[in-house]
Image 1 (cartoon, one colour):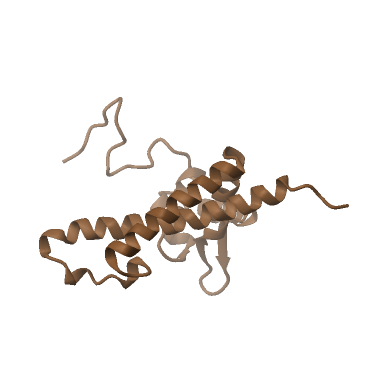
Image 2 (cartoon, rainbow, N blue to C red):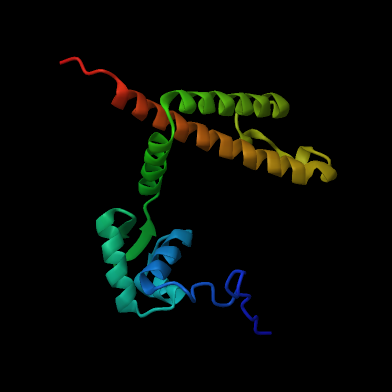
Length: 172
């Protein structure tokens, strides 16, 4: 059954890239890839020619957004370090050192509460099958939130350190 787009809603599921240009579709295909892909695989996902995909992948590689793995065939993947760097810089730009420290403290308290509740050091240490079947969905939700809190704390602390070092007086 063909979906008809609503003027105020998302594009139909079968054509998610319809309104985007080729460069955006290639970018999106790389971002959503779970493993390195060939230019042809990315082109298929981005609904463009292999040559267009290669052109845009080269551009994104030059910017550091994409990592190119030489070989036969050449494969491409998103550069997670780039996106982490971008997130940290965004936090530095939009928050003060004090705000970042408060957030690190809040996240630390959340993490410690999960550690106490689940008697473990990390979400990976929790054996979900030890819980009643009725609780499993809630436990999975908590583990996901716990993992997110760990990652957010790490990023906020990196941002705090960066912001603090850029505002510290120099000793010349």
